[in-house]
Image 1: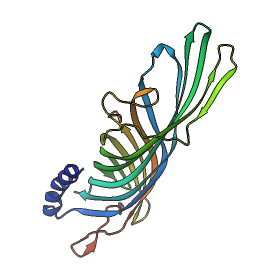
Image 2: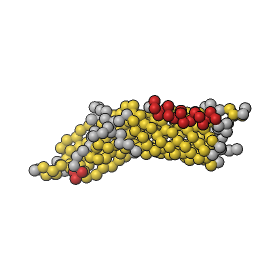
Image 3: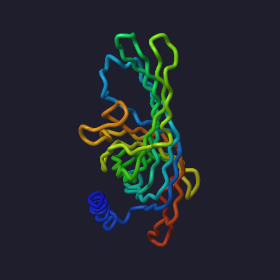
Image 4: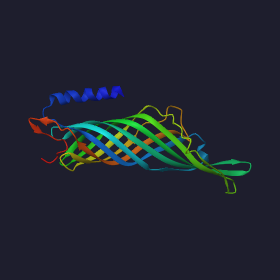
Length: 247
């Protein structure tokens, strides 16, 4: 994480220091929406899997941002925020023995808390800004639990289980990366509406490890939120706001 922060500062500082036409913005951001943690590459025989369904779950991001406007159109920036990413998936599988085909219906709930450091570039058109960048994620903590039922070959319920009281940690890697995109709409001098999405590029599990029935886990987020500019920079004696997109 230190390397990412140092690299971000090394890139941004010379530009900020030497370009007098920059308009700065620093503030807080909060976003809410839905997320998915999508599993794959099953530990069990794929032929025994009848269906897999992934459900969206609530998600939340909260932190701070810094960005600056260069030559009235280009936007550069970074953010530091905490994110709670959740996912739910339902696996229906079967196993055949001498008595017939047994069925298992299992539902997994997965939660991951991360510290995110996006670095992005964008283009401003009047009240809108279109952003694209890389988001660096650092896993803080996580848990997973499952509930399910086993059914006999005749369709009768054989047993049900509920492991919600015995949550355990998934073997996740500390660092992962993904693509972050957003559309910003200026609402007032200090307030900006943001619609954003995140697509994880890395498998969150450590190499050759997994939990439940999968050895691959990918994160996705779709959020909407607000940015509030706290400390606009003063250039030439006049307050300049990145979010003041109307001239």
